[in-house]
Structure formats: C-alpha cells, structure tokens
Length: 257
Image 1 (spheres, helix red, strand yellow):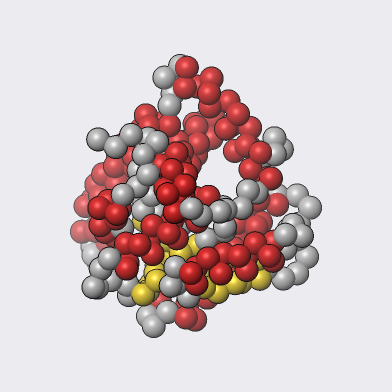
Image 2: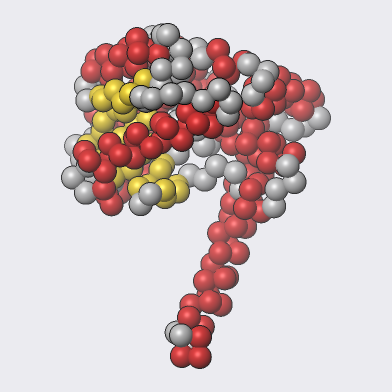
C-alpha cells in the first residue's frame, strides 16, 4: 500500500486516468498552484507512455486579480510546452468584484474554459475539462457542507465526473492526498505558484484548514472524511436510480402526457 507521503509512480497512471480514455480531447485546468501543476506533469507522463489516448492540452487563466497573474499564467504555458503539451492563456477582462471574489473568479475561470473547449474541441461532446481536486479538497468540502446542515446531495461533495454546459468535468485525483502530489512535484523538480488567498482567514476554506489539525485529533482525518463523502455519493446515485426506475414508466403514461 502506498503511504500518504509517497510520490505517485508511473505505474499508477492507468488507474488514475482511466476515465480520460473515453474522450477525444482533454483540457487540463492549470492555475500554476501545486495541485494543478502536479496534475499537468502526471497526465503528461501518462499520455506519453501510451500509444493511444486523448489529445491533451492545458488551459490557464490570467484572472488579473494580482499583479503577478499574467506572469504566472505565462509560466504555466512555458512549463506545459516543456512537457510537450499545447497551452492557451485565457484572460478575464473587465471589472473585478470587491466582494465574493473567490466565487466570481471561479465562475469566470469556468466560463472562459468552457467557451474555449466548445471552440477548440473537434467534438465538444467528446471533450473533457480535467481539474486537480484531490482528497483533501473532498474532505474540506464535506466539512464545509456538514457545517451548513447539508443532506445527501450536499455531503456527496465533489463528484469524480459531472457535466456542466454539456461539457464533462473530470476529477481523477479525488483519491489522492495533497501530500502525494507535493511528493511527486519534488520528484519532478517542478516549481509552482503559492496563492496568498489560500491562507487568508477571510475565506471559509482557509479558516477550515487551520482547524483541521484539531479535527484530526478527534479522528476526523482527511482519509475518513473523504471516504464518507464517497459513500454518500454512492447513496445519492442509488437514490437517483430508484427515482429513475419509478419515474420512467410513468412518464409514458398517457394520463400524464
């Protein structure tokens, strides 16, 4: 069994990235942070080891929220080129919000990337956007939603595959702890960007991260929280299947037409 501090080995690539095979074009969402930089290296290595598979490209967004943003986006594109991956820098133009910045920036990033995928993919229905969400993200999201009293849908947290605006979003690293991504970056000898907002106590997720050491002392570690989220995701799928089974024959009932 792999330890949480072990780098991800090449032999793990086919298991981690099996879902990517179903697509003709795969676009990696890379911010330049540690998580997405590790994703870029791992997918590049996996694809280079195969004789078949999707076309892989990198998308990075210059959000303009910090003076360094443009330079950081160009650094991502340069690192992608070194890995043999084409990269596109997308720029968020216009006025920036003074409140709700993280949510607005997230919506802007996805909007820019979806628009690019629809334009650049040979067939958008066979294209996927891949993000670097990992096990720690899954655990944090579970706790954030638990604090709000969420039910099954909310506590299922981050799903491995979703669709938005008719484009698939894949999250192949949800079973991988951040510590393994950092260990892999050390092996790759790669640098990455540290976003100061990740430690800003004004943001809910940042406050939660500072409380996680205390939660771990109670047995609420990332592995078990993520396991609960995955089990609730299975429960959600089972409930949806039951609803489909009940509803489908009734939708053809002439009395309901």
